[in-house]
Length: 390
Ligand SMILES: Cc1ncc(COP(=O)(O)O)c(C=O)c1O
Image 1 (cartoon, protein in one colour):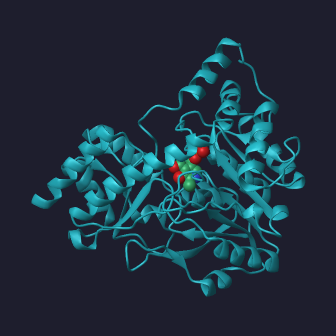
Image 2 (tube, rainbow, N blue to C red):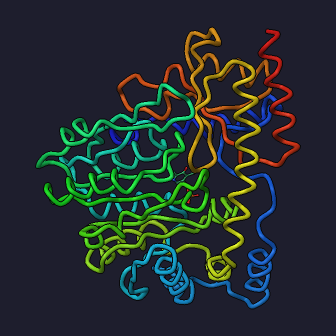
């Protein structure tokens, strides 16, 4: 039997497939971005209390009120943007659902959505499912691997046209670790205003920052509040990727459409975990600082280890991935290399080409995640050293 033209246009997730391969070959999984260490005690405690309190039924479709209030409070505290939790927030099943619900609600067939490439692999299928066409703008790696990935402003401008409906900005960025600067976001703002385009931002790594990098929500930039959908989730900040709780913040008219789509997609996110989410968002500020410090140690360890065995490893300014160039490691392409790495060396990574559209980019790139316990990184680093003798 045939499948829909939409579903035929994209493949299964390469990232999730690499996780299955890691399990199959007994390799250390540095492919998928999920922490293998515990979530904060206070957050787990709140989830246990929600179970005991019999929070078992549907929450309000667009999110439990106390959770939405906590989201609004935190957004104002950290980004200075005041929002109405009654009319401007939709709680979804992870930022994954928030993104697809947003695109289904706001983009139409024939319209274009600009995506910086390399990109988190969901955005391509998300755009296709909404009927819109993704239009890619390249982020170029720095020649000095300690430098920043950059886009060419002229190429960004050339991507905007009368067909453009939205631009997706992911900052801090997966897979490159780029943190967009105020200047860069202002450039995006100028183009969004000129072409009457929406910004849809994925900010799920907002607290995972290094070297004094500062996370700026594009909604906080003058002129953007009314044309921005800000997407975030509990997944990464609180190490609960399996809880599937995220949200979209948008002006009331856009939120009304996102809520309708969300309702018919999933009805709502897990009620008891929304209750725990309210406690998570209320954590003391030191939690975010300590968590970033621990990630910084993991980043340094893996970066040094990768460089020592011959990778050109780009230093991330945010998020918990290291993008690498494998040109000097003598492999035909990223997929061959990643297959060999998982089968023979015992480390799962993600082939770079899965972060690119049809441009053929990423064939000499591979991504590693370092959101792992010290013992896990020890094992991965030990295995990677086999590369020197193979
Ligand atoms: C940039 C980005 N957005 C979204 C997600 C998925 O987030 P969630 O668990 O909130 O659906 C990921 C997961 O790796 C990601 O890297």
